[in-house]
Image 1 (cartoon, one colour):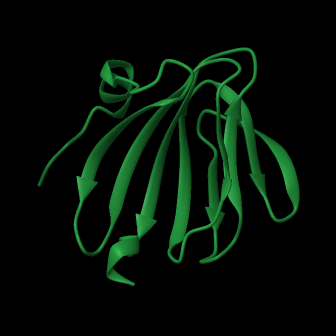
Image 2 (cartoon, helix red, strand yellow):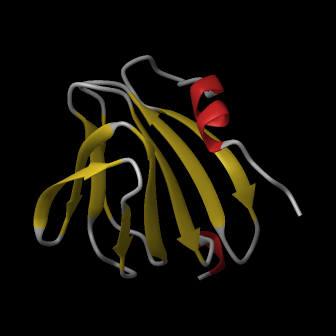
Length: 110
């Protein structure tokens, strides 16, 4: 068993490009991948698709999540689910937005 402090890992994540969200790969196996995102105000993850199910768990802050039905506000404690192939994206508005993205099964195994 491993226990992760998602907030601490996201805060320590480093972005390869300062205009893009910082990410941390917290778990990676054939069954699932967990990616932590620290999205600063004005930053976003563009709408895209995955062959896997995607579950977003908002760890901290507020922001906007996008899907096939448009955009919705999301806050700490919210869980947003996407079916395989469903468009999804996220963006921070006026505060830092920390999200755990659970992707299952890992896309490369499909």
